[in-house]
Image 1: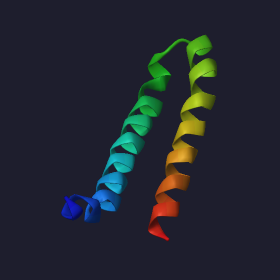
Image 2: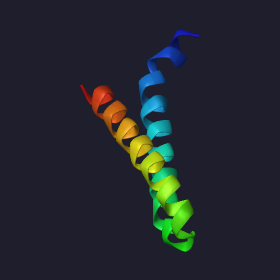
Image 3: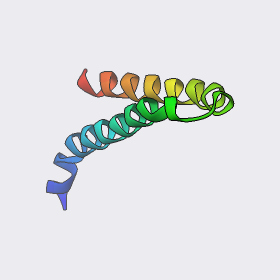
Image 4: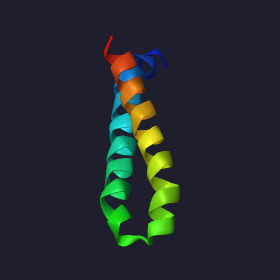
Length: 61
């Protein structure tokens, strides 16, 4: 059981990278949305992207 705890930071980092990629892909396809959808979604996506980047930076310390 203790072995799995040793890998937790690595898994957490990996999961954050995957989620960051998903947000970036969503931002890439945002231009295919209507203007109203872009205005509603862009701030949420940017906020999520920033939080993920902050968490990745925290893990690196």
